[in-house]
Structure formats: C-alpha cells, structure tokens
Amino acid sequence: MSEHASSYHNTPKHIAIIMDGNGRWAQKRNKKRTFGHKAGVEKTREIIEACAARGVKSLTLFAFSSENWGRPEDEVSFLMELFVLALKREVKMLNKNNVKLKFIGNISGFNEKLQKSIKDAEKLTKSNFGLELNIAANYGGRWDIVQAVNSAISENRSNSDIKEEITEKLIEKHLSTNYLPALDLMIRTGDEKRISNFLIWQAAYAELYFSDKLWPDFDSTELDCAITDYKARQRRYGMTGEQLETPVVDSDNSGNSNDEAI
Image 1 (tube, rainbow, N blue to C red):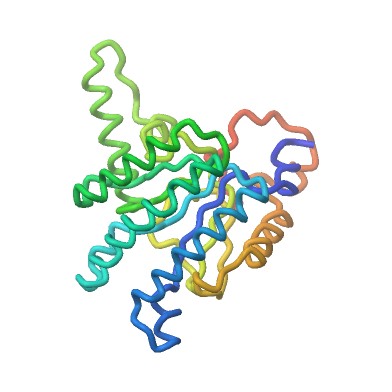
Image 2: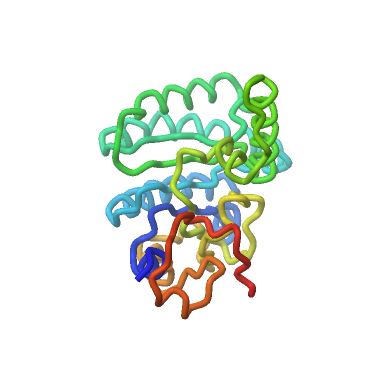
C-alpha cells in the first residue's frame, strides 16, 4: 500500500488551528472581549500540552492576523500587552517541556518590546526537539506568498551564476513555514467555515475541520474528535480511491500536479 493510502490512519504530524471565538465567548457572559482573550490564553496552554501528548510533531496557532490591526484600538493594545505577558509567563514552561517555539509573520510590525520578547523566547527554546510550536503573529497567507516570491526574485538577482525559474518548489523554499512538514490538518473553532487568509498556500491539501466550540470551550476531547475525523479520511491527493489501493511511486507528497476534483 502506498504512503498516501496508509497516512490517513496516523496522527497528523502538523496541525494548524484558527483560534476563533474569544470575544463572543466573553460577550455571552456579559464580559468585555478582553476577558475572552485571557481565557483563550489559558486554553492555548491546554491544547499545546494535549498535542504534545498525542504525538503531534508541529502545531501552528493563528494568534494575530495582519487584518486584526483593524480592530478597536483598545483591544489591539490589550492584545499586544497580553502577548508580552503570556510570552514571559509561558516560555519557561515551554522550554522545560522541550517545546521549540518559532514565530511566523511580519514581526517587524510589532513594537520593540514585543519583538525582543519574541526573539528571547525563540533563542531560549531553539535547541529543543519536542513539539514544534509555531505562533503566527501579524501573519497573512497572501503576505506570506508575496514575500516568498519577492525573496525568490531577490535571490535570483543577487546570484549572477544561477537564474532559477519561479516554481512552486522555489516559492515553498521562501515561505515562512519552509522548515515545517506539510500541513495535515487545519482546525477552526467558533463555528465559522472559512480559513481567513491563514496558511492558504500550505493548506492546499490539508484536511479541514470546523468546530462549533468557541476557542475557550475547545478542549482535549474536541481535539480528539478532530484527530479521529482526520484519521477516518482518505487523503487522495488528486488520485482516485482505487489508485490508493495499488502501490504507487510516491516522489512528491504535495500532490500539486494533480486535480482532486477530477
């Protein structure tokens, strides 16, 4: 049986989560939206621990999108302060648990205090080899593709000996996630059915799971439901179900050359 045919029986190696619903969770309790963001931080710790316990290799969390700057100024300011405080509070525990922390996104858009906290956290955990935790901050999928293309063009211009054609492989080399395994499962909480400009290149063949739970209510049991659902799916990568029952030469896990709709 091919690698593709057997892969849907396994725990996903790379999970990404759109942690949606903090504000609505607070409003349901007649609280300010900031109350929900605090609860969301607590939930994040639980899910990180749950993913590590279940053998997930990489977890990517959508913490702050490039579009979130358009939210009310007081909410954005609170999120920035919460970001700094959470990093200082959590990074030592993450390091103790062998978690490697990385940030993806346009980090230069943050203030110097937050940028320093991010760099210090990455430096402290860079030698760890347990769960790889990736925080998408000031991140947008379109931004990621544009910066990757520009970086590839710049590399071509600076190298007078080699002029590469702009290919999918070259773009992937310059994406902010170039060090990560392929995305297997994307989860969105909050009962919304869209991916909101998150990892749009990387999600091309990811399995999507939408939960009606608001993020502070999403727990390890809900995570298990998502993983169980993932394991039951047949990941065809553009092939037919019959093809997956026959051994095939699997040279490219992306399946980008096929059309799954056929």
